[in-house]
Length: 533
Image: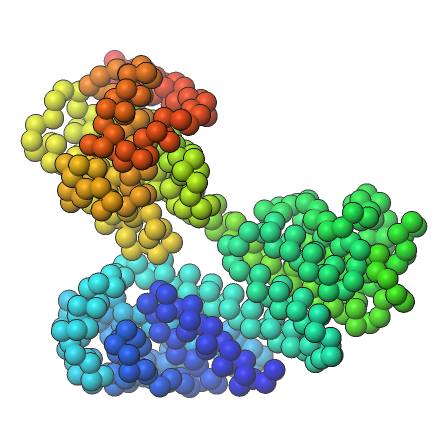
């Protein structure tokens, strides 16, 4: 693949990926920015505003050298116009496959520069201002969080482009073999960050077996960490075990695929799945009818192993990021729950209940995960409510109750600028809305309330009634069930109530017992401190 073709592929992929983030991609070739032609569609107003506004272009051209030589942090070139440089340096410091991601932030609407930019781009300012408000522009403060994600995306897209280059090199050798092309294209299509690793490995083994005419294909993962550590994936009934293969696998772990013979199984094709100098595992295929394995077939096997290595690295990176993200949310939630000894573990329990309820309803896996995370952070806005109000044992006065009622909106404002958790926001903002319209903050009713919020609402109320609070003791389970039935159609979605009441609460009860013990310990500690004082 030529350099120009590589640039075009990168430009198309980055443009498509960044459009979902509201960003515009400007390729850098050599040390000059290459300005694409803006479209005329009103929908693509961001692209036109960035590419057709002379002040933005002038500011970026002026600062281009500094941006490319910098550390990769985002920089504001104009009020409300931020640039994230994505740079890969080759030999001699030459910039290769670089570009700039340009984002418009909310301060663009506040500092008066929008009028000037719309004028030079020949856009209607009133229309753009309305579209910008609807599009929920990120804040300047969120840029340090968005910039690393964009740079990581650039790295991943660049790896995908280069993998496609390798693929096309293999394709040129196998131009007359459609099946081989189909296999490699299938593997590339499966290289999706955040995809199901097990499904991808199973599919890869199956595709390779069908394409190469093998009776069986195995992928043995030897890595000791990551989501697929020490796992085996097998397609076919005659494959030898990992133990049976161990001797010939250990005999050679070079980068090239090789042929070997195993007693009782004949000739095998073996390719090491590598990440740099590290062996991640092996891809083994056997039981093929016909003559000895040719160099083309071994090349195909080695290429497939190369794609598996890329996927395993991506899967491990995604798992690490996902774990870090979830850990951060859990730490924030634990800090909030810890403000009141009586609410220890509340958010974790609501998260588990919300996940189980979404499963019981039969919702997709992605929604189930969203329900779990939304339940986890549903009360994060209480970080903005005074501790004295949260811990008050008596009846709240009007002012205190008004403060409590603010927590859904506070939580929404805290989380709304984090792109990865945008799907969680309906559960945070609307979990105190009621089916009959008597809830808050917006007084939504019926199907106006997002399904996610309806799920979190019933789980939140159930745990509140199941837990000791400063103003009352926990209610018996049957009384709680009776109250939920009574509130079906008024507070809760009447279609969800019977599904919830039919769930198995064994896991929840275990978490509740743990939370009760933690609350007792916390209360004892508070009492000891008060006595010491």
